[in-house]
Image 1 (cartoon, rainbow, N blue to C red):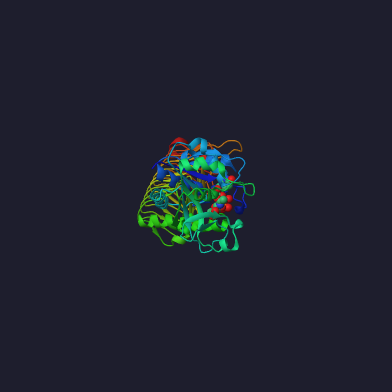
Image 2: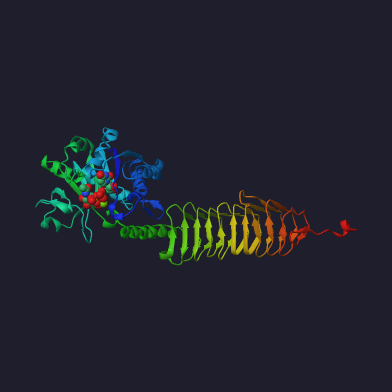
Length: 448
Ligand code: UD1
Ligand code: MG
């Protein structure tokens, strides 16, 4: 059986009360529609076709090469949406599977079960149905006395009796492709829309079978509002955390450990409460992170410790310890055995192996050698109002407390700056500079 997947994602998602198209709302850092596209690709090995409309460019951009897209403009219902895919898909496969873009939990197994039933019953269409605890406004599955599916009735058009039916339409369906393309043009217009669900009645009228496959409500219920979005976030978070714990990561409290779908964590790493791992973060083996740490797009080596700190776009080699209360910004690169203590900020700077920066300092646009001591309150004055300027500190240097390094400036290897000095000129290797502005201390030999 050859299959193509259509993902409907053109609707506005009114109940989100948002300027952002519904399918772009994120669940654990990823737009909902990306999860659906993943499932489709895993099922078929090819890219799905996504019907876009509201915020089309944004949806297209978010999908990148996960999917192809086709535009539905204006949006005149789910049937009308599928009609827009006909030119691209007719003749390409013998089964067309339609999924909604707001069901991030849909699994490949569930789709396969539905497709098996579809094939076994040689049905014109097969519906994925579910029985939610509270059927609300979902379309209801109408069956005859013998139990054969007869129609899907939208809640607003259902009779009071039909409204008591508990079996609901998830919206996920598959069709025999030839039958779909020869009937999609016959959908009636209701309230200005064409409903995909009305194909069921057309098939039944022709004596064709419409099959139904039951499914887990949690998996297929669309994420329509922010309450449901928060539910989805919690469910996805639990799933991610469980996968990581089973792979050897310790979490003191998974309920307060927030990890986005794109993050990887090495085994024997300990994650303490209120840890957020986001974006393209990669964590090594045997680390301890948190409590109260945020790591975004950061790469962390093995055996690192990060306590109560904020890291964005930072890189830590092995055996680095950071915090509490440090802020590493984009381009912070800490080599092996660096110690960065409390209230330190580092931006676009490299700290060589074994360098220590214990308290209250700022390094921006600096290149710091190995085994340097940055004492309390050191600041690189790296911005002259127009340009970012560089500071170089040679290995083994000792930068005294409260030193201002007015960039561009170079401190030589093993050089020392006195407490409170304002360094405006380069300091040679091994020299001591002190005072405001700092002068290099003359040695016995040169003053003689
Ligand atoms: C739909 C079903 C309903 C089902 C429910 C499950 C129809 C007519 N009704 O109702 O039986 O119980 O889903 O969640 O299908 N879309 C487009 N273009 C459009 C309209 C919608 O692409 O012109 C997309 C939306 O972006 C969304 C999906 O189709 O991803 C479903 O649309 P939505 O408006 O949420 O339909 P429901 O009213 O929820
Ligand atoms: Mg919906």
